[in-house]
Length: 119
Image 1: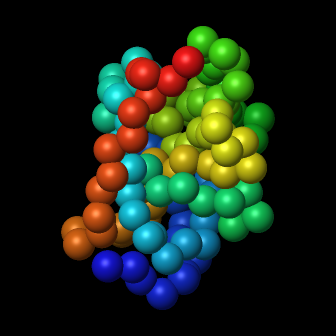
Image 2: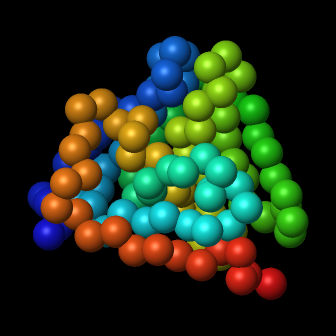
């Protein structure tokens, strides 16, 4: 079940980092890599042209590991992970849908991706 494309507002827990995305939610994904399994995020893939960081850029901490290609972002104040720049498709971001205002993931298919098996 996809939805009509729409703009959604999102933020970290403390509200310092605020962003918006445009998507129709074709699917949501989980990942089993070492960091995604620990943060237990449910993500939607959004092209960088459909993402806008509205505030808090200076409050984002970046974490990289393994190949140092993917860029994981966290709020320095509350520690919440709102999004990351993807490794395989670096022009896309993985957005943590639990950071979207009033978003209900019910009815959207969830695909499990294999991250820990990536070379």
